[in-house]
Amino acid sequence: MICPRCSFNILGNQQVCPRCHLPAPLGGTRVAPPTIQEPRHKLILAAGIGAIVTGVCLLGASGAALLGIIALVCGVTTLSVSKFGKVWDNLTPGKKALAIPGVIAGIAGGAVVYIMMQAILIAFKMQFPQD
Ligand SMILES: [Zn+2]
Image (cartoon, rainbow, N blue to C red):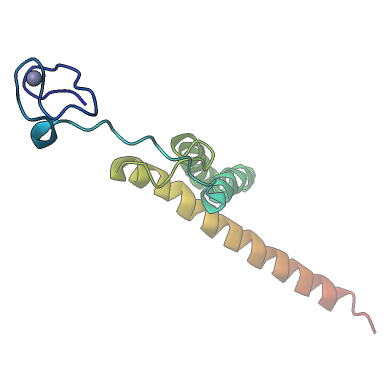
């Protein structure tokens, strides 16, 4: 550890700083713990990609281009801030706040796509009844 008074590097087994005689356990600054590798946050990754896909789809729809650009930007921000879902727990609240719109856009976009697919499926079944 480093002596807080004189910045001398105190060895672990020494109780007193050899240079300024400050008792080491009382004021030593601890070395920051190593950052633990987080498990990949699949929801964040999926939501980020979902927001980008949603954005691209909206860009093609008339009247929704602006919404598409917003979703696209949010998705790209989410992926870049979270490093494709690799970091989330260790993010600062500010960075999390930056990434959350993309997560929401991705989940909302995914839900809309799911509902639309179900609706198309139902419409298709109604159009072409099996029996
Ligand atoms: Zn010292």
